[in-house]
Image (cartoon, rainbow over all chains, first blue to last red; front, side, top):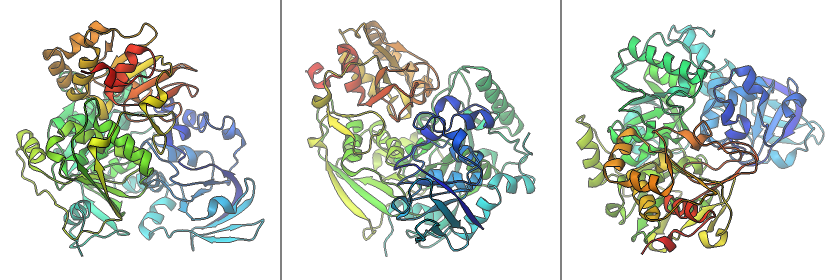
Amino acid sequence: MEFTGKTWKFGDNINTDLILPGRAQLFTEAEQLRCVFEANRPGWVDEVAKGDVLIGGYNFGMGSSRPAARSLRNTGLACMVAESINGLFYRNCVNWGFLALECEGIFKAFKEGDQATVSFVDFTVKNRRTEEILQGRLVPDVLLTTMKAGGVLPLLETEGLIGSAK
Amino acid sequence: MGMTAIEKILAKNSGMDVVKPGDLVVVKVGTAVLYDNNFAPSIWRDILKVHNPENIVVVFDHRVPAKDIISATAQQTGRNFVKKFDIQRFHDVGAKQGISHVLVADYGYALPGSVLVCGDSHTCSAGVFNCAARGTGAPDMFYAVTKGETWFRVGETIRYDFQGLLPPAVSMKDVFLHIADTYGSHANLNVEFGGTALPELSINARRTMTTMCAELSAEFATFEPDQVMLDYVRERNPTSFEEQYPDEDAIYLDRRTINLDEIEPLVALPDTVLKNSQKVGEVIGTQINQAFIGSCANGTLDDFAIAAEILDGNKVSADVRLIITPGTQNIYLEALRRGYIETLIEAGAVVTNATCGACGGGHLGILASGETCITASTRNFKGRMGDPDSKVFMGSPATVAASAIKGKIADPRDFLN
């Protein structure tokens, strides 16, 4: 599984209240999507295109348990790569089916707008402009399988434990 | 090779002899707490089977009583779930109402040595009871409730030893701000607390610390067991448990001693608590529009006792709205019996029912553009309590109470003899 896309850069400690503000917590998925990064980067949801790649700094996604990873997935981003990903946010990436990779050095290696090729086979990231290749942190098989399958909800549905989405 | 307290808890609940940093463990879930947001129409999926209804707690806390049609619908869905599976531990609007993490403490739901999960980030609160307690996402909760297990990545552990005594008007909130300011993020790390100061620290004070560890981005926050904690749990829950002590040769990434005598009132500047605090003297005089004491971190009797002591005989500034939100209705009632509520209301505070309320910008005290709040709650992210252009400073309940009187950030030591 490999993606090539245009990159968007966000810094260190990007928190869940920026990704999905509290006021939108009970909104529908479609309404939540409209609010992504409204406080720190208004208008971005209209600029990001399907297949793009988000580049983050340290501790990306710190904060709340809210479905912020689902909202990022819903923007059409192919995946995200950050220096490090907050533990709770990482769980939400796995469980909402949003492909996420931790990769040291990623932030400096990219200028916003560079094309990135991200591999979820060998967990490398290539900058198409500079040709630099970075090695990301391995995603354990069981978590990768869940991420690729769209998260845990489809699994629980298949097992007859939860009902289908309305 | 020895293990830290959290490694031993995870080992015990995953059936492993040894658990070490870097492992991915699957553990059995002792307690799964569902709350109103889980039942929201944009999140909820009908649960067809549960692993064990006795392991489930259901709480409505974020927006109670329902503040709009969506939250009313979520709570209606939650009530139907409770009926369908005959969930006994249910905290609806009413006498047993409160914030989930505070109820978990007050009802003894978190058993030492066990695993507790809840889809709210401040679930680490229950680590005060030597419990592997962690905030998860909503899908995690569907998994835990239906399958009775979950997974954790095991991180390294930092040990904090508390020694000495807190000075007057200084609380564990200030100690937390000191740790967050000095050491910054603890992302993907566990924190373990112990030390000679423990007997002097109330469960409420310790729980302020574990709750706030979400703001360090810590994975697990765990206190070493002591008699105060064990008695507290046994008074509330007859179920047997096996608390877990760290091994003497446990391996820590770092050991840090915090001398409580040296801590002063601190205030975190807006947007983050990480490396962003100053001594209260540095920010004295900053004008505020709102002051808030509440949340899972600071909605306890200890917090209202100090606030009432400072506000007794004083008046809240005409330019400030002081909002007080108890962590549970039981705390509210006890604060009323002790006279704190009367003192607070006479001073000009507004006391709300128990709920998360203003902390998450959900209801009961939302900030407008350009407004400034000083809060004793959990989080001061940009836009957290309202408009993205509002500002949130964070301090202890004492600092917030003193600031409400002055109409600007003030030193609580000026109000105590």
